[in-house]
Length: 228
Ligand code: SF4
Image 1 (cartoon, helix red, strand yellow):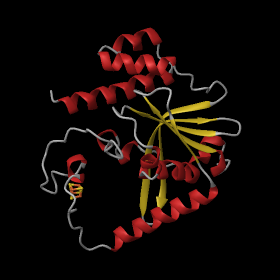
Image 2 (cartoon, helix red, strand yellow):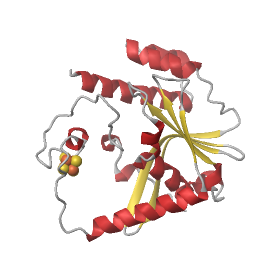
Image 3 (tube, helix red, strand yellow):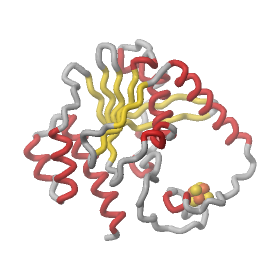
Image 4 (cartoon, helix red, strand yellow):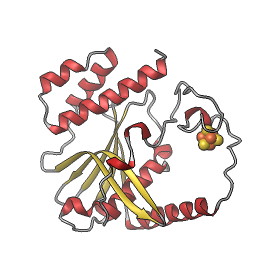
């Protein structure tokens, strides 16, 4: 097995373990499954970290969707935690290097996850609207457990993000042709590279690149119609 495939599998397995932990499966059984040195280290880091969610209602592996223009925007969240006056989005990351905060801040994941939660997350709070100022997205890094990266939100950011997404979707709709990127480095990490004849195997992920969504785990059939 290639090194990058092993890392991807361990990352997926770690997500599954954490998901099952939030669902309440017995800790001793889950701990026995963290049976490689890397998985064991991530699992120990995860168990020793206090996420301070005692008074929160938690939704692990939550799928949300919203209509945007003629399309559906979908996202799969690792964990959403609803508190009295806070709504937290957690995303587990298994990066080998700690990414720069600025790089994560402008990522589509950071912008889509927070804005989509405002659009569609009211169903998690008895159909009460979620105020952007209540929302915070937290990337918890399995290799750097005491250095989570936190992104609060605001109404101004939400309006900007949603308008940007609408604009991008309109632009895509207006395109007749989709030329391949000249920056072929991007193709190394792209899920669609075999369609573009830009290779069939994934590159070794040495830096901060990673797919936005794990599409192999996410299909439209899995997404409930939750709109707000
Ligand atoms: S492989 Fe991906 S990044 Fe490269 S040209 Fe095709 S769609 Fe664009």
